Amino acid sequence: MTMTEMLTGMLVLSGSLLILASAIGVLRLPDVLCRSHAVAKALTLGIFLMLLGLWVYQGEKQTALKILLAIFFQVVTIPVGSHLIGLLALQKDIPRWRHRPIDDYREPGNRS
Image 1 (cartoon, one colour):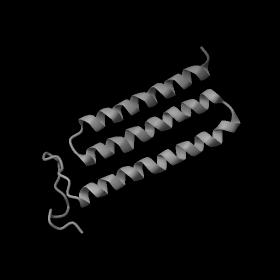
Image 2 (cartoon, helix red, strand yellow):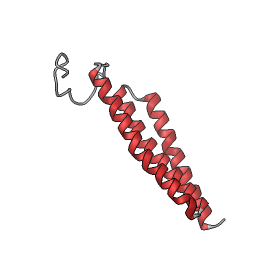
Image 3 (cartoon, rainbow, N blue to C red):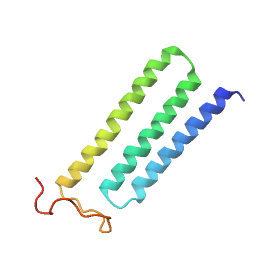
């Protein structure tokens, strides 16, 4: 087994584990804001690592630009989408987890 194959395996395996953690977070976390946080962090990093593993495995300069563009768009769009879901949840007054550590900075009736 070469060093490239070992590095590829580690990157893909760690990316897969992060994506699995993101899926478990979506299923297990109590409210929309916690779930969107799990998706934004773990899924973005998991896809990033898996695409890096693909880049190491391919080893060609022709695929480098395509993989870098895919990484860039994933890093930009997933957190922005997660943030928009969180804003929509706050605007629609979707119930939050009752044991959250701090209260909202605004009163429930004043959502402007």
